[in-house]
Amino acid sequence: MRSVYVKILLWCFATLLLSLVAFFGVSVYVSITSQHGERGGGFRLNLEDAVNAYESGGPQALAARLAKYKRYFGDEHYLTNRAGRDLVTGEDRSALLAALNANHPKPVNGRMVLAIPSPDDRYRLITRFSGRVNFWTYLPYYLLILGAVALVCWILAISIASPLRTLARMVDRFGAGDLSARVNSKRKDEIGELGRAFDRMAERIATLLTAERRLLQDISHELRSPLARLSFAAELIRTAQDRDAAVARLKKEIARLADLVGGLIQVTRAEGDPSAGNSEELRLDELLDEIVGDCQMEAEARGCHIALKAEPRLTMRGDRELLRRAIENVVRNSIRYSPGGGEVDVKLGATKDAAQISVRDYGPGVPQDVLPKIFQPFFRVDDSRDTSTGGVGLGLAIAHRAIGLHHGRLWAENVKPGLTVWIELPLVA
Image (cartoon, rainbow, N blue to C red; front, side, top):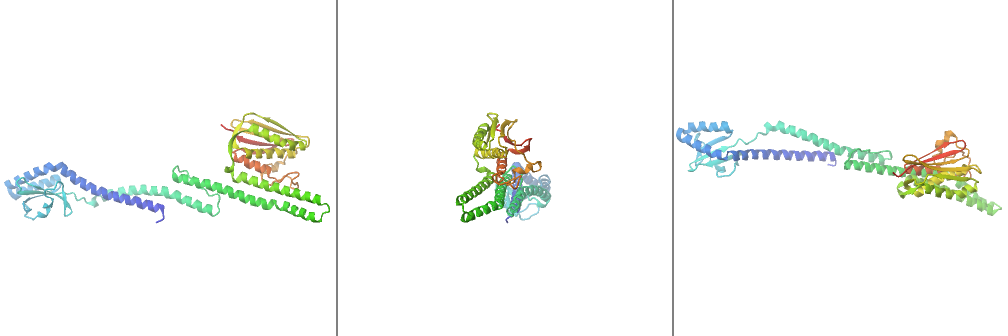
């Protein structure tokens, strides 16, 4: 028996049947013993009354008196002599005297019997109780109880077995490759907690597998061109007259390849392993000041200027390094597309419960139809540009996923001139 549903039903039914048998037996015993307790003194009065009737009126008077007892009490009564001979019918009832001198009725031939001797020990009053309960008389009531309890047991078994079966089906689906399989249990008990634990595990595994698949796809797609250029540069070293220029070209291609691999690893970590970060309280104004300082040299190299305007003391909770890289990617992207001698405006403000960071450049902007795609990995507005003009298309994708891990939002909008990238992050209450 491997079914929890069947086990629960069988155990419930076994408990019910045992309870019914015990209830039936106890009811009979309590009924008879209670009668003896209530009528203990009455039996002796009946004995005295029956003896007087027999001695004064003979067997006929005794028979009438015993019949009266039967009508009144519902039990069978016999008055016998000391040897157990019935004084009315003459039958031998000595077998019933086994219950003589007992404090309580005793079972004799399947019936409860009580025998009381007269004070002079000449007579015996034997009472056979009508305590043999007719089971068939009470069968409908027992069946009604059995049906009600069976319904409760069935509901109990269903409430336990059904969610376990659902969980088993979801596990099978997930194991077969359906990463969207979830239990979505609303129960508040241990079974519901088990279902929610599975959902959390499935979500985690699905995220990791999706990130891994995307990483493999991205690597296979993006490494072809740099590897081809690297192979060409290596071949050029053997044939080129200017060996130093060829080596410089080879180093440049290796650096580009290293940047690409580093970006792939960074974006995969940001998406696939959010729990690896260290969450802490941090000041956004201080973080932005640090980022602007780091990017200042790059901006000066392009002849740009970064202007920072930040509202002080805005605090949130998150992974400082992950956020720093995300915002820095946005700022560096704006520097890259800002025209020479232009300006990059970085502003920090706040709404009721969120901080808003805007990074604006005064470059050409992005065509409106491809604006939502700029946060996708390896997307380039101009497919012809290389790393010297547009990078590998991972900076904004890394930023988008990092901001999402902090329950924030990242979007962009064209302004004339240029592009503004907005970052919204929840503040500490």
